[in-house]
Structures are given as C-alpha cells and as structure tokens.
Length: 165
Image 1 (tube, helix red, strand yellow):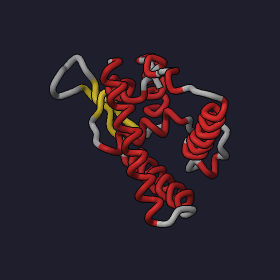
Image 2: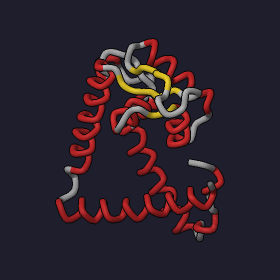
Image 3: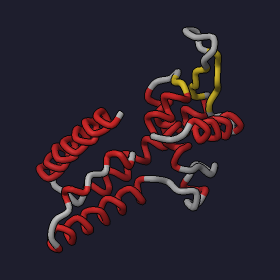
Image 4: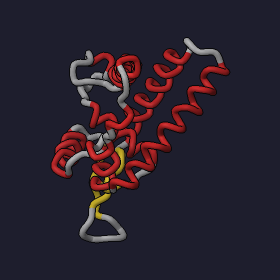
C-alpha cells in the first residue's frame, strides 16, 4: 500500500494498540498464506517457480486481455521497471505474449498464451479452494458479515487511493 495512505490518527491507548497489533498479525497471516512466495515448493506452483508478482500479473491478464503493462503496474502499485522484468520473465516462459496495440502503434498489449491461461485458471481455482478452506471456520452468517466488513474496508481503501492519486 502507498505510504501516503498511512494515517496514524487511529492509534490510541495500550488496549487499542494491542487490538491493532493483533489485527495486523491476523492480516499478515492471511496475506502470507494467500500469496505464493518464491520459497513455495515447485509441486505447489504448477512445476514452475513463480513469485507473487507473476501470479498477480497472470491473474490480471486472466480477467481480460489485452492489458498494457502500465495498467498492471498501476494496479499493483509497482514501478514500470519491475513490471517490465515480470513481463520479460513470463514471455520467456511462454505464458504471455506482447503484441502491438491496435489502438496505439506506440503501445503494446499483453495477453495470455494457451499455457498461460491454463496456469492462470489453475491458480484461480487453487485460490478459491484455499479461501473456502479458510472460511470453513465460519458459518454462512459469519461469512456474509465478513464479506460486508471487507467490502467496507475495500471501499475505504479505494477512497484513500483516490484522494492520494
């Protein structure tokens, strides 16, 4: 998250700080288990080693290609040089292709190859299985409440991003 979105006004007394620390630890745990790291065993990464940016890039392209690298970089909050490295690596692996844009001859669009689409779909299916496994700790009512609460948080993040952008 952009450091410009950080607001320390929510920090209060020791009780609030303990609650904040506990919440932060829970969020970090969820992020850790939902994101694939480079240390993940290859059999859990569809035999090819990926990092989280590779997964996010494939996921964005899965949602609707063609997409420009700059749009992916903006969405992920990463530098253009970083997305350039990710794109080069995924092209080299045969998972995405870069083609000149029909709209703008100066720009290039990215899309998934057939193999890239298979891997992106497998990643999506695994993410859904993981999420369902984690959420099985909650009954339907609690899952609905969690969905509502997360929706509120996401809307607040979007507002803050819009104000800082």
